[in-house]
Image (cartoon, rainbow, N blue to C red):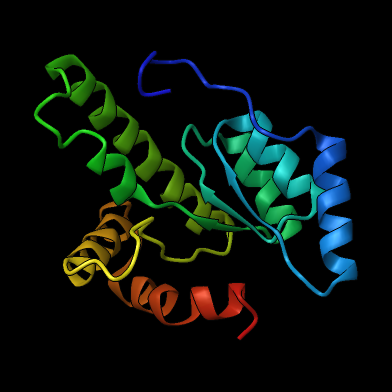
Amino acid sequence: SLKKPDTITPGGFSRDELLFIVKEAAAASLRVMAHANGEEAILAAAEAGACSVEHGFFMTGRALDAMAKHGTYWTPTTRALARAAEPDTVSKEMKQYIAGLILSHLEMMEKAYGLGVPLAVGTDCVLPDPDYQSIYQAELSYFEQAGIPYAAVMKIAREGGRKLLEM
């Protein structure tokens, strides 16, 4: 929650529901991408067979291990988190809290890369946004800020989404 710092709101589906969703999707030759934040929701998504976790805020090492084990992609959307701190109506304290979350997120991205968690680039930006190119570039810069080498970031940008979507 960005309204109650250090509070992770409950996920939308139980583990059993996620297993059912993934099974039904597979029967229709579809894949499941889960918007999941916090260890419990991320673990549930990975263990149920979701092909990716979008956002993954409040990521943990345990969740990364499960994602690596199951080959679950992570689309970290760091810029979406940063955008939450931009409005003038956001308090100084909340801006600082979000800045700390971003640093933690970047640390988890670096760990994910080291563990071999497949990564993809996403912006959580709805097209056609006239600023999409700069938003996408900003998202790529977060991968580099996480300590992922430039060449690897470019490979993630070229191949991550394509492989995730099986294109």
